[in-house]
Image (cartoon, rainbow, N blue to C red; front, top):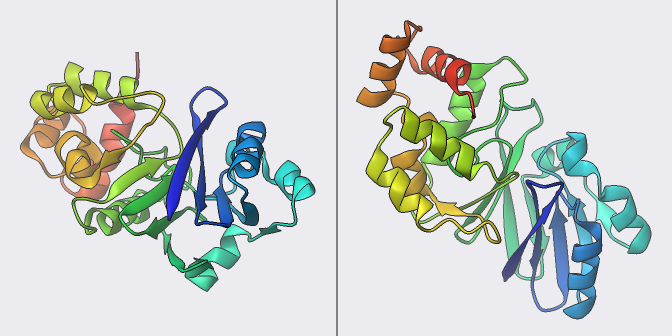
Amino acid sequence: MNIKQFRYHNDNLAYVIHGESHAVVIDGGAVSDISAYLKNHHLTLKYVLNTHNHADHTSGNKRLLQATEAILIPVNQLITKKNIQIENLNIKIYETPGHTQDSICLHFNDFLITGDTLFNGTVGNCFTNDETSFVRSLQKIRSLPDNTIIYAGHDYVLPAMQFAKKNGLNKDAVDAFLATYNPKHIYSNLAQEKAHNIFLRLDSPESIALLQSSGLPHSNDTQRFRSLKEIEIWE
C-alpha cells in the first residue's frame, strides 16, 4: 500500500492512499495534481474523505467527484464507521475533537494522517474552545507506537520550530528535526514529535518554566495547552 502527499494553497497538504488499482483521497484540494497522479498510475478513485469540514480541506471534493465515480464519505459517517477498506488495507478512523468537533485522524500501517489536530511541530487552533477534549485527542495520538509517521494537514514546520527555538524548547531535538525537513515531503515520526513538539510535552519542565515566566496558568494539562496557545506567536 502506498501514500502520496500533495501540496496546495501554499501550505495545505492532501493525500492519496492506494494499492495496485484503487485509491482513496484525503483532503484533496490539489485536484489537478491528484488527477494526474491517478491517471499516470492507472488508479480508480474509490473514496473521497476529509479530516474535518473546513473549506480549505474540502475544496477539492466537488471536482474530484465530478471527474470520477468516487463516493464521498462525510466525516460524521467516518466517525460512525470506524474504518474504511481499500483492497486489502483497513484504514482506522480515530475521533479526535479539539480543532473542530468533527476532527478525525486516519491510521493505517505505520502512517497517521492527522489533519489539523497534530502538525509536524505544533497543533491546530482550538476552535471548539474545548481544550480538555483537544488534550485527550493528543494523548490518544501520543499512545501510538513511536515509529508512527505523522502526515499533517498543513506545513507549519518552520514557524513552529522558530517558536520552539526562541523559547528554548529542547533545542537539540528541534535542530535535529530541522536538519531533515524537506518542504517537498513533510513528515515526522511520533518519537520526534514527543521530543520537539511542546504540545505533546505539556507537563515537561521547560513547558512549565515557560508558562511560569510568562505568568500564565499551568496547574494542569488543559491550562498548559490554553496558555501555550496564547503565547504561540509565529514571527
